[in-house]
Every structure is written in structure tokens, then in C-alpha cells.
Length: 296
Length: 273
Image (cartoon, rainbow over all chains, first blue to last red; front, side, top):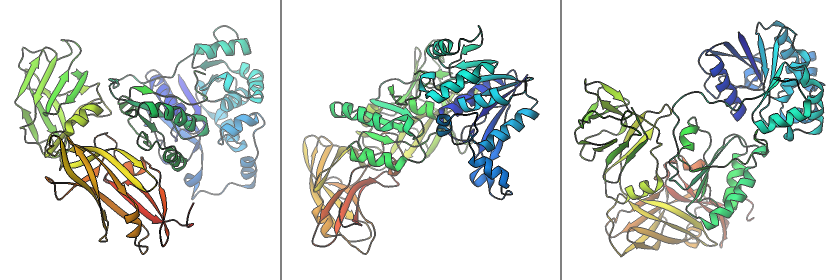
């Protein structure tokens, strides 16, 4: 069976991308698996592509588009236009879903030889529900939770998700929310927690007074809130440290905030790491300050 | 073979602990280990002083001649085969690292877990330095405290001072330090640094050294025990603005590319906040 997994940008660094790669690697043990990225902004993906998984991109952007023929007036118009299938709040959450990528995705769905196509965020799931030919088995994946979606997105989900052949959420709590919301037929909705590839992972000895946090720098991760919470701990427990594994734009602001709050001795902005399990194992606590975790 | 715990103690004894007998090297007490250099596999050193205590191995590495670099830890089985040892332990324990600093030494050994789970040993030539534990920025001073690292420690109070040396210039600022049982603390006044500021240099860096009677050439202040490298982009302290007779000068502590502590003085671009 050939399984195609559609993702907004497989070349970036983030939790959804990592777990999609992990899932693809697991599925590739028994199936032919392809990850399809709506856009490509870098030569190589940040995460290592699992063995036997192929990666293709529908639309090069940024420097990856340099040297190519510039888009014609129709494509330029499409890049500016928003796809009417996807509501405004979802378009604000992901800039890679445009009328242009919608068009590329439609073309891809028309010609793909995959048997199963999976979406990995609401906007892609909605486009799948709208444009996938009936010969394709369509699965929607949810990486946040229903309660996190704004009313316009919830309305679109209620209207279009029933056209999907199945759906997976991360937690039993979210499955219950979707059951109440969509009243789907038995077996349509499954709980599939985030996957980890098999292997020997390091284990924290819980000896170090270190709290770890990880994820890209974005408002949704609420690092200022984490710093505020940690500052209360820091005053009482000066031996404790907070290590934030986060990269990308916004580092300077976060660093300045750490200095302003007088937390320079106790909070370190670690940047990105390719061995996150190894770094987390040095800590005794993991802090998750994100407002949109799948666990709700 | 996978260790649950892999550590180096302050006497350079490598300690490996295994979960079960079946998991460990239970071959009748004839434990044998070797180290293979990661960059030159021809360099393989057999560890001769190895003790097997139940599911625990203790290997004394202190007298072993090891070049600088990263070494793969190998278990030698009954047939003489060299097998890589894996570990679940990050090998990092902050309290043990601080304890390791207390002994004078010229070589530092650390255990590492590579991302694939292999157990490595890193050997590094070291010179004594002053490990910084805390930096406090005040209105007209910066206070630093920490411990002597890899240097002999005297019991009780010892005379010491922190010397700030202006990089590529001749400015020197000296502040008396408190040194007790190897722990130091010093409040560095910033007014003399403002007075020595050379406006012809965009950045005036002041490198910090701890001088003691035993270490007259000075121990460079730095932070290396916490496993965080490239602190320059990771650790941030607030700055302080001081107005003098001339320009207003902004000063903040920072870590250099070598993770050593310095002060950076610059002319405040807007003349103030």
C-alpha cells in the first residue's frame, strides 16, 4: 500500500514535523511511504528523513525558488488569494496554505498513485475533504485539539470532516470531544498518540536541578509565561536552572527578556539541538508551556 | 551491552552499572575494557585496572595515557572481541562535575552518550581556572562568585583579587576578592572601567582573572562545568549604564567564544536610556 502524508512544511523544525517523520518511518516498515510538503524553503529538511521514506515538495519558496521562472500573473494572483475552503483563523495559523498551494495540492491529488492520503493539520484536512478523488482513502490527523480551534474553523470542521474516511487525534480526551462534536460512525475516529521510533533512549537520572523546555519560539509556546512562572521558583530555589531548547527568530527578544528579569544565571537559551532526547535526559523536569498541546 | 549508569568520579574512576546480570559483563570477574580513539581507530588503549563488582564495573583511568579527543568505550569479551558499550545515562551530573573541579589536574575526563546511545569518553588537557557560579549586576559594580577549578585549594581564608584587564589596551582594574576554602567572591567596581574607557574602540572588553598567592599569573574566570558550550549566544546578563565626565558607558558581563567571563563596555549610542 502506498501512503502519502501531506504536511505544510516538512523542511522546518517543530513537533508536528518530528512526529510526522516518526510516523512515516514506522509505516515504512510495511508500506511505501511518501511525505509531501506543500512548500520547500530549504535544501534539506531539519530532521533526518527516516529510511525508506521519500520526500517531495509541491512549491519551492524563498531562496529555493531563486533561479526559477517567476510565477505568471495567475499564480501570483493565487498566492495573494486565500483559499475559500479554509477559514480565516486557520490561514492565520499557517502561512503556507494559500490558493497557490491549494492548486498544487489539487494537482497532486489528481495524479498521485497513493492509496491513502493523510492530512496533518486542519487546513490540509479540509482541502483533502474537498479535493481528494474518491479512489483515495483520506485520513485527517489532528496535532492540537478541538478546544483550541476558533469558531470559524470548528464550523468548517463540522461541515467538511465527515467527508474524510477517518480521523486520528492524539488523546482520548480529544477523541471524546470530537465524538460529541461530529457524532461520527463507529471506527471513524481513533486515538493515536505521537509516535517515537524504536530505540534505546537515554533516561533522566533526575539528579540535576534542571528544568527543560523545547520548541520553536512562537507566541503559542508562551515562553514569557514560562519565564514568569520560573522566576517565582528561581527566587526560592537559586540552584535550579531552566534550559530552553528553542531556535529561530525571536531569540534576541527572549534573551533580552531573560536579562531584564534578572534570570541570566538561571535561564539559558540553548538554541536548537540535534540530540534533544540526550539533552532532555540531563534535566529532571520537562516544562510544556504551549497553549495548543494536543493534550489540551 | 548497555549501562544504566556511566560516570567518572573525581578520582578518574569510570563507573558502569548494569540493570541485570544478563545485561552486564558477568564473565567470572575477568572484566576487560579498552578505549578506541574516535578520530584514529589505530589508537586503542587497553584499560588494565578494571574491577567487576556484581553488575558494576569500576575502571581506574587516572594513570592511563590518553591523547586529547573522544574515545569509544569498548568491552572485550572472552573471545577477545572488542564490543562498543552503550549507555542510557547522559553522564551528566552537575554536583559531580563541581566536585570534579576540586582536585588539581592537568587532564579532564568526561563521559558522554552519543546520540545513538554509544558510551564515549572525552579527554581534554586543562589548566586551572576559576569556575563562575553566579554573576550579579549592581548599580555600579558586578559581583562574581564561584570556585577554583583544577587548582590547589587552601583551607580557610586566602588573599585573592580579581584583575580586570582591558583587551588590546593597558587598562587594569583590581578588586579584592574573598577566597575561603576554594570558593571566591568579588565585587568589581565599574567606575574605574568607565574612567579607562577608550572611545576609539567600539567595544572595550575587560577580561577577568582571579589572582591568588599561589596563582600569581591568574586564573581566568569562565564557566565550563555545566556542559553548556558557546554561552556567548545563550547566556545573557543585564547591562548597567554609568555616566562619567565624558560619554555614558554601558557595561555588561558576557561569555566569550571560549566560555570565559569578560565585561563589555560600549558608549551608549543614545547617550542614555
